[in-house]
Image 1 (spheres, rainbow, N blue to C red):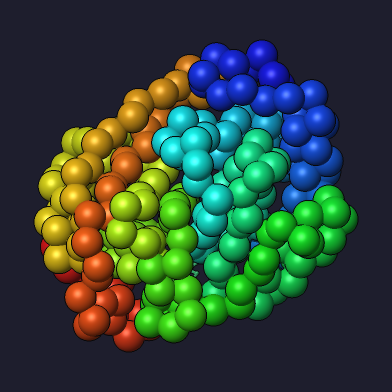
Image 2: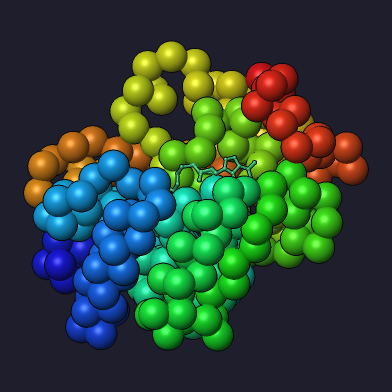
Length: 234
Ligand code: SAH
């Protein structure tokens, strides 16, 4: 585990590696009851979920203390990031109640309740409420196309922070990146860049799209729950 993380240029201490394996066990136990992942093979979970989530550490500034995971499902990538960054406080946002309850059990089992908060809400509500511009970093994995994900994530980030999106290589084929950039510009986003990597065991190509939050998001964004995906900004 530590060696593979190393290949992603992510440093992991022994304790974090052990707790990641405990997270995998908890995730697989919950996945038997709630639809959190279709991947059930522990080796595949390590590669596709744990290591892919950990790759995000590459995009976290060293001083990131407040991280929000938008559409966390079973705690991905938020819980692996919390384990890799013990000084950070992570908030998991999830709209589906059964997944929120599964996350609560997983977080309790890992003894992370003091540092990982779980919010049952739509990201659009959090972005117009108490979570607006109150995080250093927002992370989003497998939730929506970039222009939609930008509207869910960027309003949560304080100016000077950033949003990080997990994407496959297909995002570079169409105009998803360009659309993401145009949406970000409306939301207070600044510079955007791509960080490509390969999963250690399979060599599968992945990338992180990183968007800086340059200035405050205009008051009208995010729009009402459901509108970002129904009428994407770009
Ligand atoms: N990030 C996880 C889960 C991906 S599935 C992973 O990488 O495995 C997408 C999840 O996002 C679902 O659980 C869905 O309920 C949640 N979601 C989608 N739109 C949302 C929104 N607007 N606010 C909060 N959660 C949302």
